[in-house]
Length: 116
Image (cartoon, rainbow, N blue to C red; front, side, top):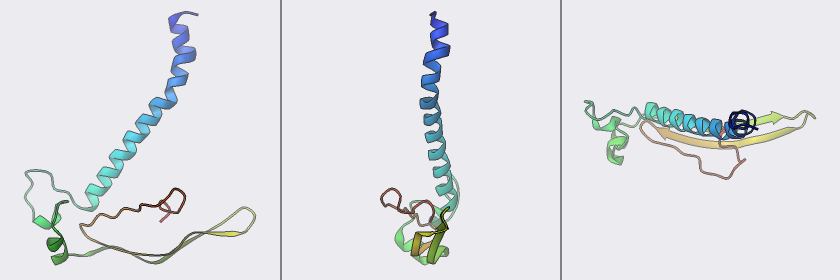
């Protein structure tokens, strides 16, 4: 088998999932960073704006101008399985996030973070 045949038939098919996994990971990280930046209205260096709109705002500054951005009150999500039984994925979540705050769900895998 020549070098090019081995590359085409063996090496590339084995490496494609790894390459695409890296691209996917980088894309997810960039989208997440941009989403957080948009939510907290990050101003880039050299941008004029009040202190409370920066990601590094102090607690006192945030409290002074806090606006309710996200509020969950008794959030429950129920899925119906193929057999007709119902499963609660999330039950009774209460959460309040003010403008300029960052919220992170840190729990074990499979506990309903993404669905919330």
